[in-house]
Image 1 (cartoon, rainbow, N blue to C red):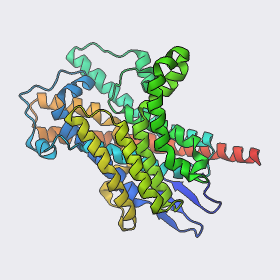
Image 2: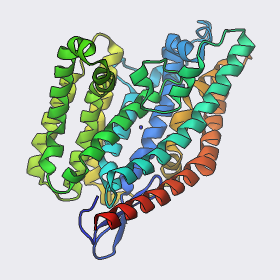
Image 3: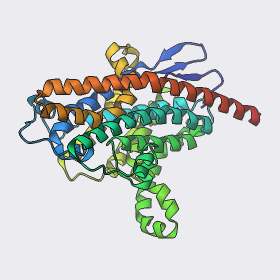
Image 4: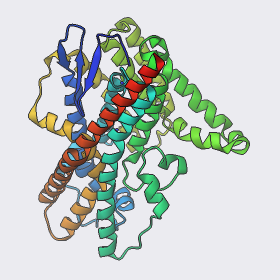
Length: 402
């Protein structure tokens, strides 16, 4: 889990750091967003290794294909302390921050690019790194099932579709790695943002109204879905995942609205009531309040909004820090690779008699090491290739248009 403002305003996108260049050639890195990216990555890691693995053993079993962790492995005191209330969900807070950051920075990525060059850049940004991380997950899963004598449950088409985030939810195939759903939401947002790219410049009110449009779309779709599936199943096949992603895209458009405030395209007098309405719409679309876990997730997503806003307003006080900068740099490959592989490693080490602290540390260090390798070997080179092709395509399109 950002085109032309004017001729003198350009946005330069380092893989994980956003920088702006104004007409006076002053270069300012948006450090608060980079810091929050690193914090979000750590929150998700903590949530999974010091939370889900211990408190939701059935879900871990479903994704690792291993029996649930035996009950004689009691939940550590540290885990109980971190999750002192069922309403606390650190992972949802981290994912909420990721969504808001995406909504905030994608408008910068749209600057000086046509829609096709934006799509090329995003594809090279997303797909190679995900493919590398998902391959690691598959290898660990395969080794785990072989050692446990469990039959491999996934078909080749299920696996191949999984390699392209944004397709699996249309085909409704199994979620193998447990994290791809957030990337599917990201892809849906990229598509909508690309379609609306010119509105970020000239008609900002459309961006502000998008959560309302998404809410109407979702509610209308589910009313007409039975008729649509019988009348034109292909339209239903395309539209349904967009409808299911609507509430999270509302969250991302809160980030986009804050982008408009940050770039001074709308005033704070418009932003504050707009975000309040956006949040009400997000809450309205969040319909599953049947368990404490879902309430905790909702509160985590909710808390990400004021945290992001406060950090944005205090952005001038943010300075680079080695830890948050490191986790920001590897945030995407770490997010992709850590979950199932880390669960299986912790499971195996605990069964071999390791204490929970070294088991968690081993999983963390392994995930960080693999993510760092993917970042340097796959992510950075593929992003460079994507930017190069995007520049060529964008240049040719502008030359043709003129």
